[in-house]
Image (cartoon, rainbow, N blue to C red; front, top):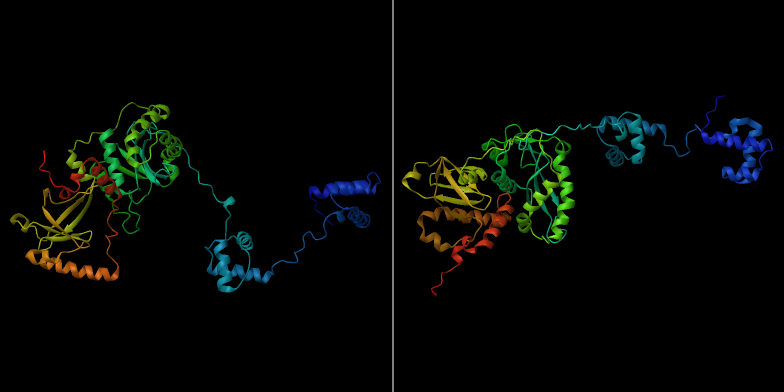
Length: 452
């Protein structure tokens, strides 16, 4: 009979052979084998009766006493093949217990599925290979951008996001901007600042965040985000990476910034987003002096914008279309807007007007290139009934708005539309304007003094 021995069995056989030949004491053999003297005597007795095969455990190759019955194993695998073929071992174990009353452990089911070919362990899966690519040739040819959420102020201020723009050819930090969140308005503001500083690059390289790409399956091929529309108007290409490894240059820069930038701001006692945005230009110059490299070709591919500031403001605004009613009214973000009833405006009833909502909180409406003057009625604000009586033109509209308010009050829906953009960037812009000159924000709260 052929007996397979391990290295441990061969070592034990050599010790027992020496005891049998009287060249080694039993107590020394017990110490070497970490057994008692009585166990050594039993092994020696089996060796004398059955030879070298007696050193191997007699239970080797036999099924365990606590082994799950074979018919239960076959029944569980049959259920997994029929109903849970694409389930993982953990979920399949839960469903076997919940729906079929088969109590087995996760590791048991995992081993069953691996042996039956229903599951491939991670160690046997094909490894994704991410080969490095060469840098681009010129400055401004490809700009990688990303948002990094981190405790940048180490508890001195709430967590925020840092928008990072880095050149692929040189590794140079082109622009940094701190903001509350990674929203469309924040990216528009940061990109506008980038273009003012450097001009228009050939392409931006980003991830698949909803700011850059319509992630809905139905509109993925034809839909365009507000940020994508702005770049299209500026003739800037937007490329979305398939993985974070593809834009590794900006990802590695984020790791470096989360170390160096945090400590630099601690040394300079920077404790707010506004202070950091004013200070960060000096850090960018120092970072590029240390870590950037010259491009392969010295040509700068940035192009001038060649647009007036007002045109850039319109491009980097949230744009939407609304249809004018016969009464020259339309609704936007649960607010009713009434266009002035001039002769020129009366001819565009039923036409579509373009809404421009700017990152600084301003809002404007245009028909073609003509700016439309308007009045606002907020459906969520308090309504003065006296104004309804005095203004005959607004009466019917306001009565309808009051009815809608009552309905929304009962349903608990008195809030802005969820489809509209988040306005954290607008709120921060208004705070900065208020710090410069409060009269620009709310002039009605200030009464001129007659004293000299």
